[in-house]
Length: 337
Image (cartoon, rainbow, N blue to C red; front, side, top):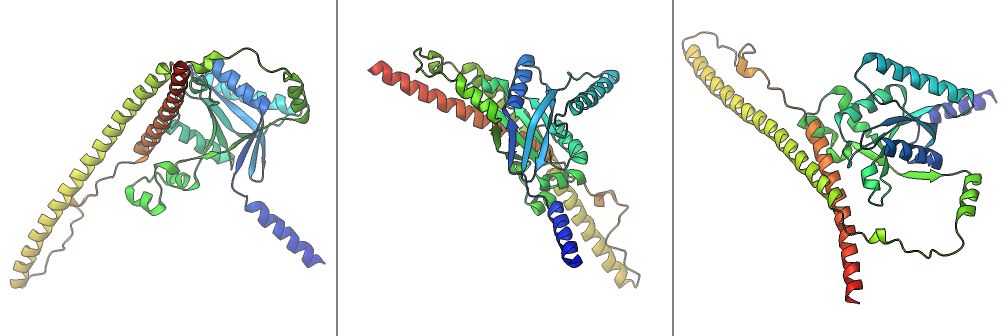
């Protein structure tokens, strides 16, 4: 009987250690409204906040959130911000509200969130929280009729490379990591309590809508489209500069290899002469020679992030252009009738 109890305890411990992968981020409707309200009030300034909830199996539940004060460069103000977070969590604990940190949220402008700062924040959170997410909300895209809310986490293979700070081409090929494998988007599921769902059902109008919403047929999407194209051009310039760094590196590498081959041939001919003269041959490698010093390969992290951002802008332009064409075809059909 004791062996059975011990075995079952070991099985439970093993199941706890092997946590299932994160599949869904379940957010309370009230927490989403708080995030949207905070981001829209301070737009176009970028704001952040804390996510609170529970980590249950393959589901990360976000039940509450609170905003962070706007960051300043002053160290005293930064210390006050940290004290504010601790005080907020203490107050929430006193009123019996979930105060477990499960990540953070932040606003973005036209989807420009894929930066090194976001990765560093993820790594800082990962030191204390095993599984955390970042909720990204884009008020500028939400104005186009889309709830631009997404949950992101870093992939495990990317975090391993980032800890080693090794983004060379050899390591990336070894891990089979490309620019699309940096972030993982987790599906978001909105949940409400039974009381809130019943209240929202009572608020629904029984009578059909009589007034037409003509704003849905608005054809002007030029400001949003123009800004996306501007940001896309800037990203392409940055990507071109990153490619120039790699071209410069490969030029230096081929020049160094040519110098090494020339030096090696010279050393081998010299050794042949020494051998004929009955002398000891010299070593074919000279670590003190500067031509044998390895040239450091530039990191590919920045180019990966820029490529990710370019893909994001292209997807946004594609979505807006598709909606615009649909409206134009609809208006053309109405005009013909």
